[in-house]
Image (cartoon, rainbow, N blue to C red; front, side, top):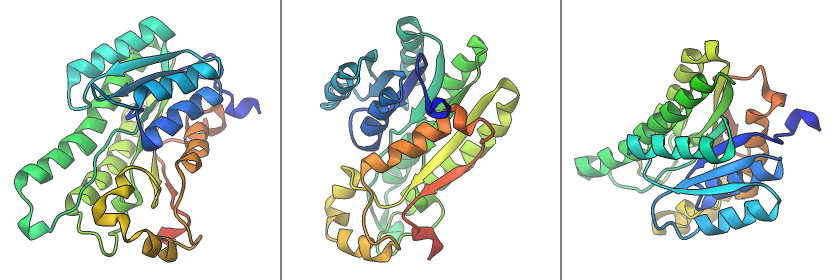
Length: 255
């Protein structure tokens, strides 16, 4: 359907070397986009992402940097436009997760979570938004938040992660209003429990069966199930959708 066709469009994806970011980057190419893939220097999976995109007949670009580095993001976005064309799609997936008791949490652990998940998302959006404003073509940005930005997960002590993702959700809504006059739509996807490298962490690995049992759909999501929501939100099919936090959680937040 042409409503979801991204042919000829240029996309930029952070966290494209693994998990949800990798799958969405390939999914955008499946929908027709050329994709710049941004991840940390030395990311083992970025080559696989690029190979999967080029195998689909789309252009791909591997870019290295940290989402906490404004200069690296600006250079990456500039390289994207130079190689692939005007930026009109961005999906920000880069993030970290860990656990810790609030009363015992070192400030450094708190700060790093905020720096990567919240400030990193803001800086990514800022670099992408500046390019979209400058090229005058409008665009669509999607930030990967989490249902943990709306609820507190039973059995997981992650006050810093929950706060960072709640911040991403409200940042998304705020940017949507800031840039609505530029024709830039900004939305968020809040995944539920999804089988990514993050959810293979030791502190949650033994709880996966419990997570599935507590989810109304009685299972954990796959990364494939984040592609459709992302493609929808950046496509013409969502042309009147902005400032939305789309829960993709198997009904978890209903309970």
